[in-house]
Image (cartoon, rainbow, N blue to C red; front, side, top):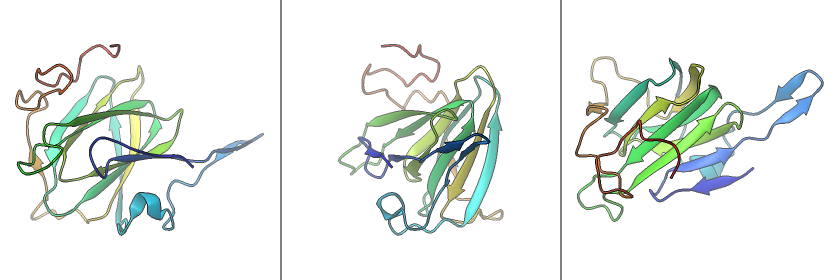
Length: 169
């Protein structure tokens, strides 16, 4: 299995092994012994999300230690993470990851980063995501910003981050 780390510490992708046969394929979605990905995290809740093509779900973060693990099952999803913590050595960095049902991988996003998604395929995206904290209905651990918040800067262009920019460079 391949693990890749990104410019924001803790943001990682973990390629899943696919075992094909004449019926289709089998893959382990997560294992407790994948310590190079999970570290000390213990996953306690799984959620399912479907987004129509072009749908943006951004920006939000968690302040009580939640870590999200995204697994795109169908379609494709652009996942963005942005660090604006005042004392962070990675303040102002932004990471974009495109995850797809065609190449299963777990995408780890520490919740203290602002993060969000955009469905970037012609079909709806179907995403299973796991978290290490139970959702608290009475006191949710979510802080939100608009999807087009001009304060989130793309470090490559120096302009406000644009979820709808063309995918080529």
